[in-house]
Length: 238
View 1: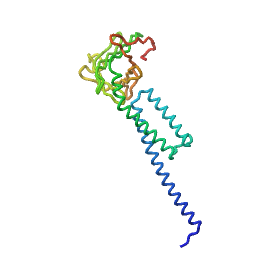
View 2: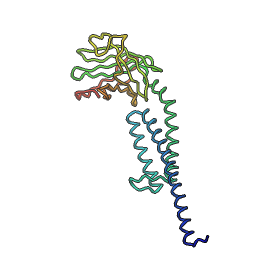
View 3: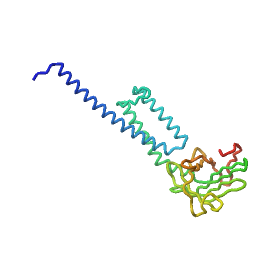
């Protein structure tokens, strides 16, 4: 059987097209796998950061995406799954996995150390607001004391907490459960708040429905001293 040159060329072109199609599918699959690794590493790293560092990571990631797409020839809004974007995504995933692993091994002890001791907030504005938290044991599970009130009323008691994603989720009990918002010690409430170190402060977030709202930012209290007096009277906490 004899084939004309045109027929041979057509067969070769078809075979080449099939081979290129298979290669493109394999390349896209490799890109998707590296992109999934990157997303998982980014999420893990982000969960262990405070709000400021989480925003910095988000901005960093956006700049990296812009740089990768420019270097690899992708246009705005285009998801280009070629060898260039795959290699760049693999490298970025490797980096974020290393950073997430380092944060997981080193971040918690540093947070534990940073949170131990006495913290407080005080203002004489309106009826005044005076908050104190003492963390006597920071890890593996935290224990301590708390107090919260005004010139007219207040309550105090004990706290227990567990670390998750860089935040200390706490349960409270009150020295006088009948007057306070929490059960009388030694019974404890559900997790109704969390503490998280932010810079030089310890920020208290209070649960409100399904979310947590910023309640008050506490400063270090020196031994035998008092928390700095907040004189900015704005009708609420900082």
